[in-house]
Image (tube, rainbow, N blue to C red; front, side, top):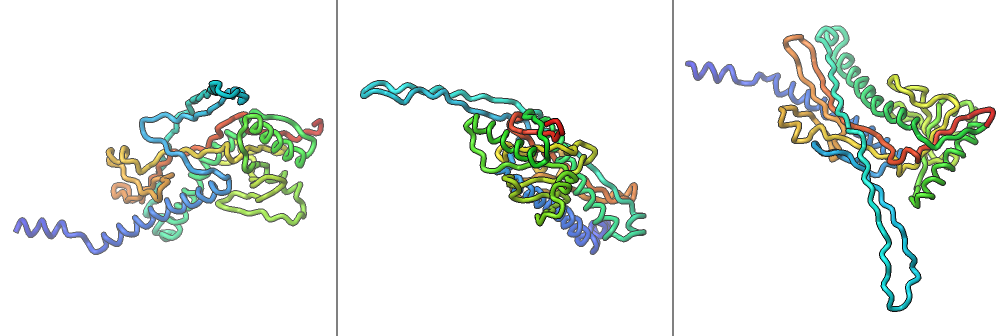
Amino acid sequence: MAATKIESLTQPRDSLPNTYTAVTAREEDFVTRFNDNWEALRNILGIMRPIRKTPGTQLVSYTASVALESGDVGAGEVIPYSKTTITATKKDDLAIKKYAKAVPIEDVDKYGAAIAVEKSDDAFLTSLQNVVLGDFYTFLNTGTLTGTATTWQAALAQAQGKVLDKFAGMAKDVTQVVGFANILDAYDYLGTADITVQTQFGINYIRNFMGYSTLFLLPASVSGKTAIARNTVIATPAENIDLYYADPGDSEFARLGLNYTVQGETNLIGFHAQGNYTTAVGETFALMGMKLWAEYLDGIAKITVSAGG
């Protein structure tokens, strides 16, 4: 009798497999949409490939320089070695950010799951993206190639010229330059011009504009952080931008019993959903360690439009 009773109690209810499948599908949908958005942005920015940080390691960037010896070497003479110098620069540690969201059962009863759950997930995803973008835009404003111009158009040209000159001086190739401008300034200049402004995940941009592969049209602030002020233009080569990330699905984290749903080869975000019976809410947790960095701070031009030039 006891054995039969235990077996009966441990039989899964018919609703459990369906519930598990629905939660798993929701987790997979969330991380897939997040990763797809960042893949699209990575392509627009021209970032070659995100760089993964392994737990227990420090992010380091390396630069190489060569003091070239003369190539005029006589017959039979020893060819002198050119001196190569490798310089390692430690970056700020990559912070892992943790977020949680709860939807009470009352919201589902009042609005239905399609609104209470799905709409809040959409808003959650957008907010998480904006955290990373807001940090990046703030960082861009610290660029040290500064200057002034008398018009918005002249500022765009000057910003592009400064970064091309800088990278040419470092003997580094530039395949494309991306720019950032205040959206109100852009529309003041564009007026009724027949130019296509594209939009993805809330970001407006123009492709192939005045020598820029992409010109991003930004508001003054994103997630409470400075994006780009009016009468300001920022430019940098695509080669100067890197995306670093910590993998939320790393086995080191799983040893704590924290298993997040991730997607693809590049796991930018981890997502987990569960029900909390003690508070009758649906909990969702997000884990991400992402940061957009520029390799060279002096490879970012920031030009201000000023009547005085």
